[in-house]
Length: 129
Image 1 (cartoon, rainbow, N blue to C red):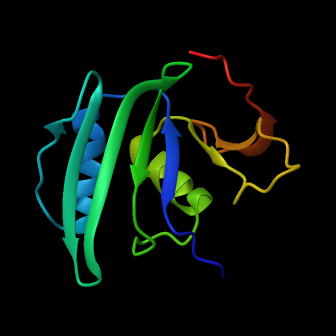
Image 2 (tube, rainbow, N blue to C red):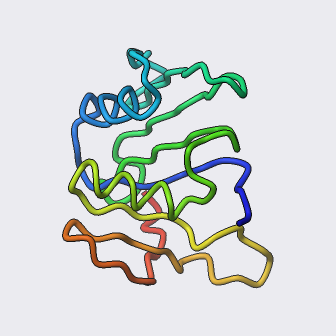
């Protein structure tokens, strides 16, 4: 299975501390968020493969928060795998890209795992906010 160079998912409104608690459990570590600008938070996990920088941007798109794991060394090979794990653990809708974007691809096509676990490809246009 292809492993993406990084992971980015979008989470329906949820408290950042709840997201961090899930990450702390997933990586068997305890970390705090460090402020990194208005509505932006960073943390860093240490793994056998190296460090895993994490960035959370609250209200990044249509009230969804962006969670970016800047490494290929995550428990999930692809964004959709992380989205499924996040939805199962957090119980909120999670969205992600369909895969690597190439010129000519439809930029507004995304994948979502709904709060109830149903999955679908859908059109998520950039609201420009």
